[in-house]
Image (tube, rainbow, N blue to C red; front, side):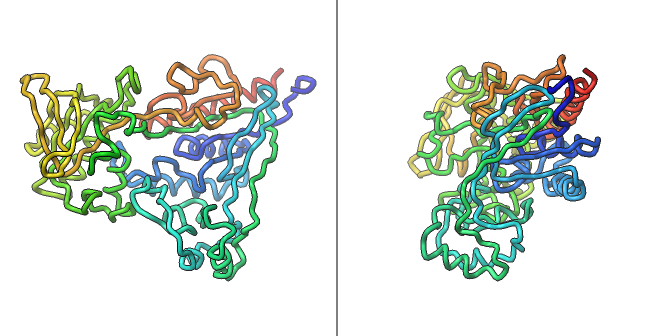
Length: 425
């Protein structure tokens, strides 16, 4: 503050997933200027990578596009992609934030015509599909990307291929001289909506992720089922393209485990039930085994669980599998003991899906900022005091999509309250 007056009524939102987008539009439509920064090339976060989401099993393009339109129509909102927080100084009402930018190599006048991708020769792992397929080194992150603007991968910069890509652009939107940069802004409050990342399944060594063919995690399963995914919505084995009809889901893969994630991530049980429903829609003869400690279907979603539980082709096995190995046939084989019957099993499948949990992305974003975090790395939300540093969505703890939106609306209000209290001093 300066002489008891606020130096800025602008709100900074860090993270452009569903929580960050929701907090942005709510605060802006309440009359505040908002700066939204996202470290990736597009907004939407993990929700954009879903096939469908609860409670109505909608496709994410619907809800996201509504909010994108709200952003486009509101002149109080500024969006910076490929931008992250470097440093925060000051106090509520008078923060100075240093923002770091990465080069996109494509300017804002891009028309998304795709000529640059046509000129590109190299391919890279497709980040939108978690590396399950390839995309050109000049690429549009996905068809519903916002902003609808291409990106050139740094791996081709300085090569003849880059010059070929530049020459293909008829509107001179390719900028091969684009560099990393930084700039400062003044804001009155900061909402941390930095989201989550899937827990590294390779760390659960007994389950063979990355070693045993056709063992995948739950976010990869979501992409397999999506029409804009690596297989155009066909749920098949990554190793050979065979239809995945006999499938195992391993619940709490690394979660509720002192060696990995000691907490429940809330979304995993329902995520696997949703994936079982995808399989039953696609294959009438699918056989599904769900290995579980206990099933947690919160709120009004108990009915969804009961529907799957009553399906004779969905079998629930109370067990924490001991290992997943490559069987004699080459198929992944799940080994363990049934907790109820005490039967020792070794069951082979076309595909095994590990329901890995959420861990906070905030460990990286704003790591130089003195954020209060709990023992798991989540940002501690400020509930009682109108502090200018506020957590929203999964940055504050495991939440599903609807809860993240509710959390974001609350965070926007807290940011406004923090600024208002400063104005009253």
